[in-house]
Image (cartoon, rainbow, N blue to C red; front, top):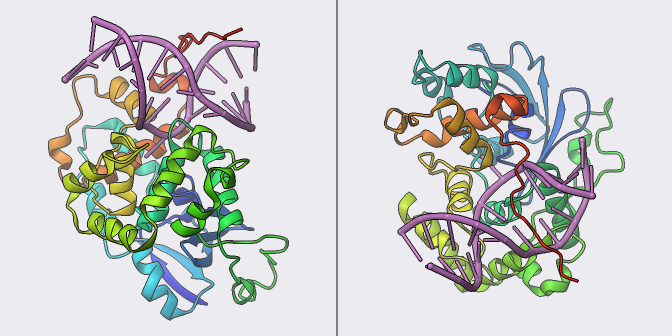
Amino acid sequence: MYQTILKDFDIRMLMDSGQVFRIAPCGEDCYTVTAGDHFVCLRCAGHQDAGCGKDGAFVEFSCTEEEFLSFWHNYFDLSLDYGAIKETVDPEDAFLQAAVAYGSGIRILRQDLWETIISFLISQNNNITRIRRSIEALCAKFGEKLDTDGHSLSFPEDRPFTGASFYSFPTPEAIAAGGLDGLQELGLGYRDKYILAMAKRCSGAPGQEFLASLEQADYDGAQAILMGEFGIGRKVADCICLYGLHHIGAFPVDTHVKQILASFYPDGFPFRRYEGFAGIIQQYMFYYKLSLPASAAGKKTGKPKNAKKKAG
DNA sequence: GGTCAGGTCCTAT
DNA sequence: ATAGGACCTGAC
């Protein structure tokens, strides 16, 4: 058990921010986080009010201090001052001011590259509920079951893990070995072939070399490499750059962000002002947008996306 | 029952 | 280079 006070940190907001799919509630103010083959349970006292203010939030981690310092501190990007980022927001920009206030506990997590690649391959043309389901199913099928006993002991009165199992994110080799058949019934749909190709790409020593080359590239270089891979376009490449490589200048434009830009920035978004960290700004925008009624954010209605015909 | 979801690929201009 | 349609699937 490790206890600390964290500023600009709200685990529930992180869970719902769309950048990560393996955080889950497990009781009152209690959340599990599974990343790679790491597992921890967090409890945040009174995060609704005090959670992200200047005084910070009281947070309990179910792991040791060593595990916190060697892994989770980096994972949650706790060295970066997000308060300073928020202060760069244009005071005249009502939308962004509201977004930053609403998502005050958001950060850009430093997720594992391989896990991020697969997660955002799955995310394309998909919804967050199903993305979570598919990733959990993938981990349960090809990952290793994690031992969480030591962690549940930290929360004896909550018994948070009764009946729940947690699995490591599978290796490229494990997924590749299963073939296309192994990816059936995970709810992946047509993305299965992208996953398999990427699992093969990242397997073995050449795979490690490929991942290392991405780690070493700058944002433009990494984006270019990623966009050359099967199933990865600009948007997914930007998500991988932002969440898996921590290039915080990457600015993924998805259907939600597109609607925001069209509705609230018809004359263009001030990218210059947020040069080098626009990805963080994007995350506040995205999370806030999810909370708005569909009509408020310029969602198109009534127009079919495609006129599909059925044969036969 | 159609639309939509943190898009990309493929084909036709 | 750019535009338009097809595409797995399930929650709403």
